[in-house]
Length: 351
Image 1 (tube, rainbow, N blue to C red):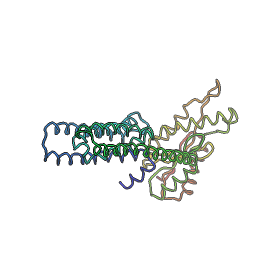
Image 2 (image 1 turned 180 degrees about the vertical axis):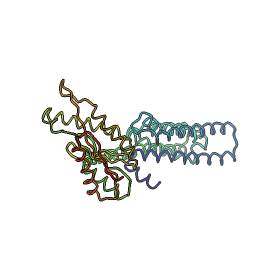
Image 3 (image 1 turned 60 degrees about the vertical axis):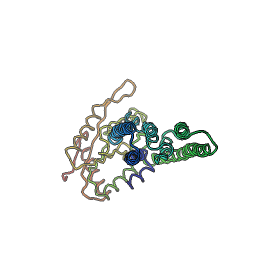
Image 4 (image 1 turned 90 degrees about the vertical axis):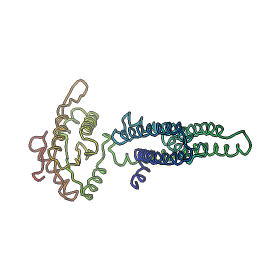
């Protein structure tokens, strides 16, 4: 949980996991509160509605958690389930509060948490809209419970309305400012760690990953690859076409490496580095062969003329070497692949 809270400062995904965990917590709290109140004042209709609400909540939150943990973050279902969460929260709140005491419900302060959750996605506008909706809901519940309209009744009602609106306003401003700073920080990080042309992680990022992975004792294969006769492509078709080749090859490599199983870097010029987090040489070789064959079979175009390129690869499983020693070893394997005729993969004899 400590790690999750820390990650929530930087990641919307971690923040959503935190909100999801809180839903389960408050589901249990709601059940406890309702059970205590029901013992003192049994009511079959209230019990039926509450049980139906709990069942619906468990189903929804179970499905939401599935997509939250299993679905890619850029998928439609992931975005739908995460952004749909605040709507579910409002509907559940609208039913839970009347069932557990209305304006006297111990669950009433959950409204502030939901307003902040909405502000994460829709910023100031979301804060205002959610505050307005809670104001309407509170008004209906409040004047359904109280009898008559007096100054003593209007003062606590007005105070609560002001709190809702202030929470929406201040929450929206704070979240909007934080989102802006977060976006600006991300842009700086991207500029520092990613290659401008291809969008791949750059040489600086490669050195940091390699050092960190070696220090943490991770098992991995390091691969260095090079586009064969790339100078000829630049000389014949121009550097603009050469840049397009680099971009397309970067996309092909990235599409083949499964998420969380490896990283591809632009090492420099026409050279790429890949870190595969695996000790299975057969698995790594299968991916490298797929990358090699995909690139070799792809047609690139210069006007009406088409052409193809090939790549050579050197691959070695790390054995606890220092980063510069490992890079030097794999670099020699790459040059061996070049010397043997290019368009092939050469492994270390060890590992």
